[in-house]
Image 1 (cartoon, rainbow, N blue to C red):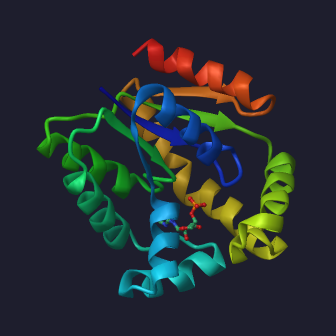
Image 2: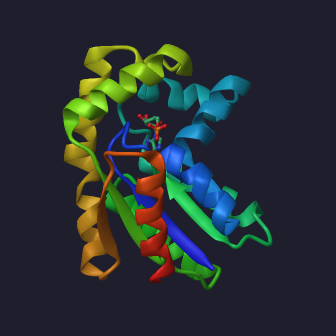
Image 3: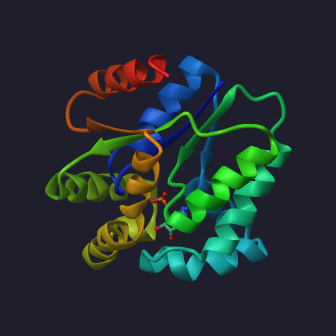
Length: 190
Ligand code: AMP
């Protein structure tokens, strides 16, 4: 059983690699961005609340995200483990995740960070924006905000796992399959 945090800035390839990882390891993909977009599409109260933060590239408040993840973990039965994608994004979220996993006698196996330089992130996000229909993918200013939010609020989460000896960084630039192979060799070492 693996519980993996796939980490990296917007556009690092977390979603793409998660899709491949869930197939190989039978894991449950828990992407908070996808969950929020689902709520948005369904017009739920949570979706409406998240919308203004998402559209501006800001983080949805911790307590809202944590509650949503808690529910998803509790309702997922018979899982081989989770790939957390886009979560945790703050140290408070990381602490909450450890606590909620402990309730189920689980823990994080490790965090794998995809390292991608900013100019490539911007190119990838804009390219994705042509088809993703995401307001936050299509506007230079919003992309800048998201990268800044990542630097200021999310990067400290890497130190949180580093202190626990659970952090590994890999090169997120190159062929999707090569990056995937690097990730799987980290996972197979757990
Ligand atoms: P993503 O698809 O992971 O890039 O997420 C899209 C947007 O959803 C982010 O820019 C945030 O507004 C929101 N979001 C997703 N995950 C989180 C999280 N863990 N904490 C706070 N906001 C989040």
